[in-house]
Length: 109
Image (cartoon, rainbow, N blue to C red; front, top):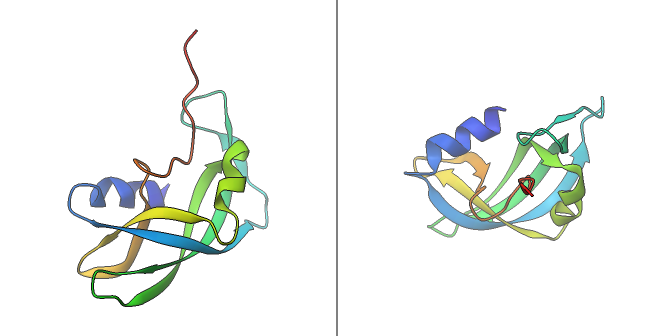
């Protein structure tokens, strides 16, 4: 959950950008677990993302995160996703969960 902690640290002071998925792979052990909402399963996933920082420099970084199984198609190669990065360390990147959800909360009916 290091990527989620990075997002929490950056969400107030980081720089938002739009990235594109260059590559996606499931981790070798195909790890899954219950998501934050208890009734959804999330998969350990490595995303290779490309984005441009505010100065126009292109960066490629691998982000290891958990994605709800039903949302994996939203992260296929070529899909655009929102990221947030540290101004002083552009390779410190997280998925911007406020704009690109990794899980969908269950409804309470």
